Length: 188
Image (tube, rainbow, N blue to C red; front, side):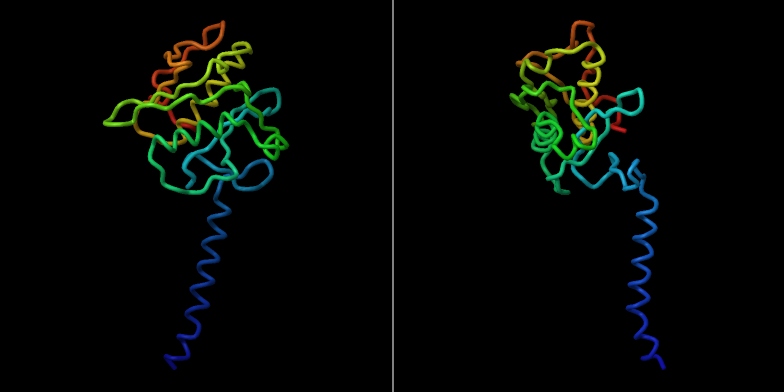
């Protein structure tokens, strides 16, 4: 009789796993299309934040880059990869979903310094980062960069430079840049 009961054990375990996975999928936050959305707590090493119109407003939303896999990288490499993805702009598929970037297309990552022996990270961008747009554009541009940096969950301070000089304000209206970008905030 005991041997007969054991034949059901694998089926019961498989059924339990299926039920648990289904419940977890139901509990994930859903986007407008009904599919689970990624959050800063997602297993991916970072999210890239792009702008998207939502009614009369523009929101900055984090999305998982298509070619990103859950992998452990040193902080400097992780930061470099996240910033490069952001500067590359949304893919055609992401653009088709309404995502766009306020960061000028010609903006380049010149260098990332620091991170050794608790030295702060310095993300150095080309002059193009400052070009064009009013205060709303500058605010969205800075929000995209800040939230992308925050999503990496790097613990050390991260500062933003343009052409090797610390960036204090952005644009003619003087949008102030937080120092460091990741001080006392979260990417949500």
